[in-house]
Amino acid sequence: MLTGHHASSSFARKITKRLQPGNGPIGRLLPHRPRLLPVSEASTPGSVPRIVVGAAIRDGRAILAAARAYPPALAGLWEFPGGKLEPGETEAEALRRECREELGVDITVGERVTGDLSTGDGRHLLRVYYAALAGGEPHAKEHAELRWLRPEELDSVPWLPGNRPAVDAIREALGAEDSGPRP
Ligand SMILES: Nc1nc2c([nH]c(=O)n2[C@H]2C[C@H](O)[C@@H](COP(=O)(O)OP(=O)(O)OP(=O)(O)O)O2)c(=O)[nH]1
Image (cartoon, rainbow, N blue to C red; front, side):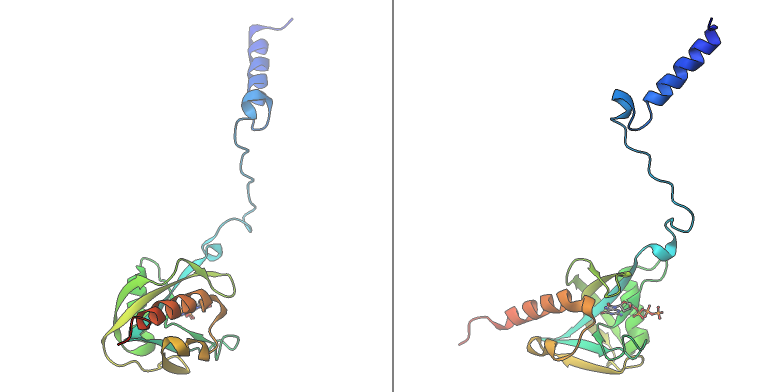
């Protein structure tokens, strides 16, 4: 015969089992417990996509494009000056720092060009902002070459693949500014 203790622990076991995700009428309503990842698969800072910011620096209807000098796989492809966010830095701070380092200029940061993009290797989130020069003349301190491109010239250089939607948006925005009524 079951003692009170055995009876209650067997009852407790039953209830506990019925409350497991996926079991019994109540358990079926519970979310499945997330699979525990082995340490090697768990989210680590290295596996979280890092944000890369790019500055579409504008002068009138022209945008400053920069040819990468390195690494070899990206050398010769064109991008917006910028780079990865450092810990604790805002996106505007990162853009101003990168433009000082890469071009030797101060900039003011404006509106986002598009929503989040993915870099060609899928490892980073790319966020491109319009910007304007606020001091100095750009020099290629880290790039192979710099060019000012008007909307109709934007396709004259091979862009990094992830930049395509931003380049298209810029061409459309700056091109539209020129398509107003003519005298
Ligand atoms: N700066 C920049 N990087 C871009 C653009 N488009 C794009 O796919 N990328 C990619 C290239 C790289 O894989 C990554 C940014 O790397 P980066 O080398 O510019 O970053 P960083 O200046 O912080 O460099 P590092 O200190 O890690 O060497 O994002 C873009 O328009 N500008």
